[in-house]
Length: 67
View 1 (tube, rainbow, N blue to C red):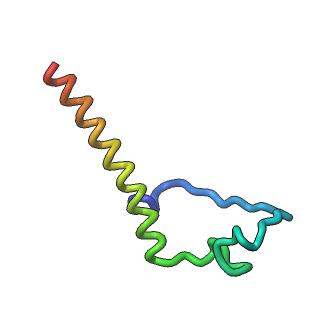
View 2: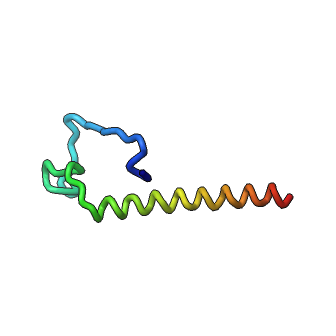
């Protein structure tokens, strides 16, 4: 459910040079290792966006109903 139900894909960059100062993790780790806390923070942002969209939709519907 939730963000796990979204269709996602994998990006693979072959022979791509990245400066050491810009690496997110040790060489070879990259995004292959997922930590629970990282997933929770990432999903929390997605849920905030969804909730904001729901609030806007409720406002639009209520304006139409109340005329």
